[in-house]
Image (cartoon, rainbow, N blue to C red; front, side, top):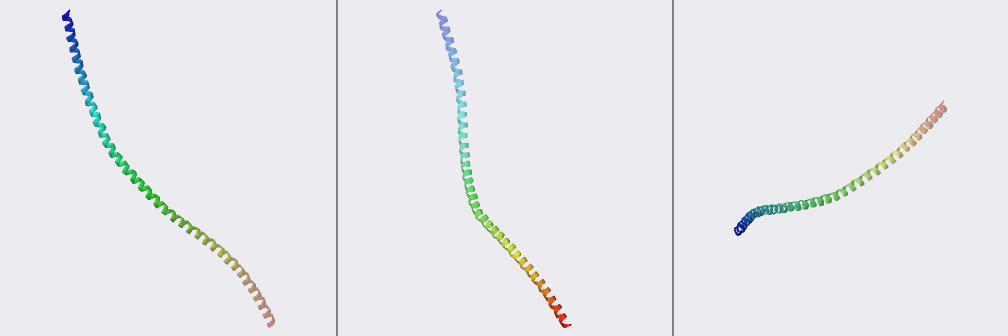
Length: 134
């Protein structure tokens, strides 16, 4: 019986050794996997640093471009105000021309009436003069 105990102890020792060997292999594979993951994460960090740098530069350029557009837009506002003033001046000039045209038309109508009256009076005087001569 004592032999059976020794054989059982040897079997248990062999089983434990096999278990330890497989556990060691599993741990080694896990270590390699974790090393690969660590390398991948490190590479990603480097790539993200590059992307962050480029993004920051792009944002700075975008901000400068927006400032430039705002400055040029404010300069254009003055131009549009000037054009608006010119438009109002032209409008006022057109209204003045209409008023002057209306006055000229009215005065020419009056002049025509005076001229027609003068012609009537002139022909009446001529008729009288002709009658007197006869």
